[in-house]
Amino acid sequence: MTTFMIAQVPAQTGRTIVVTGATSGIGRVTAEVLALRGARVVLAVRDVDKGRTAARTMAGDVVVRALDLAELASVRAFAEDLAEPVDVLVNNAGVMVPPLSRTADGFELQLGTNHLGHFALTNLLLPRVRERVVTVSSSGHRFGAIDFADLNWERRRYRPMAAYGQSKLANLLFTAELQRRLTAAGSPLTAVAAHPGWAATQLLSERRGVQHLVHRLSVPVAQSAEDGALPTLYAAVADVPGDSYAGPSGFLEGRGAPTLVGRSARARDAAVARRLWDVSEALTGTTFPAGSVVR
Image (cartoon, rainbow, N blue to C red):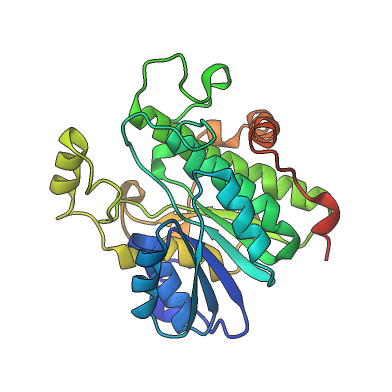
């Protein structure tokens, strides 16, 4: 399907969907559309006040819950407090090219937020997930590499864009390994990924220097947050196989209607995916709940 539009999102009545990072950008659009289609949408957000402001603009059943992906204690508290079943978990929240920063647990901020926080959240919620996990990656995964010798940039000179690429590559490796484990466990759940192409969101708008200049120059050619959310919505509701990767169908996957797209050779490395999973389990203290995902 290459003509998928917001109007084609089917009714979501009776379903519960968790969207992380839903106060702005594609996360906010994703939540708004799914709520309008009848889903109960949980806005999992770091800033609860901003979450409530966003929720007031949305029609339907929308609730706000605190979740700071840069703090594993917050991830655990969110998972413990969310007692209801979840049909779809949308791992959308992310940070892009900040100065070197660290999470509350000492992880490099982009890896810690974009990958490890969502890794922990997914493992903790999986026993209650009924359909699929959608993780938002980026075409930036193509310049990423997993450096197991210095995963958290403790010895190398920090390069924000390279760290971002590593975190987005980790999203795709996570999706592939999660699907492998779900299949091996005999679970009908699916793990899929998406990327928005080049969308005019706030990820770069608050940066300074070169990143802010790139944002200013790209806004005229970037697609809107509404169009950028289409691959995520497609991955969340369309009939796609596990380990699918949705993105824009246009030139260089920058814009256009969503379709299933390819990924880099590094993102298809099953051995690296398994190793990253093992390392992520050790770093987050969470594990794949094999006995709880069979329905």
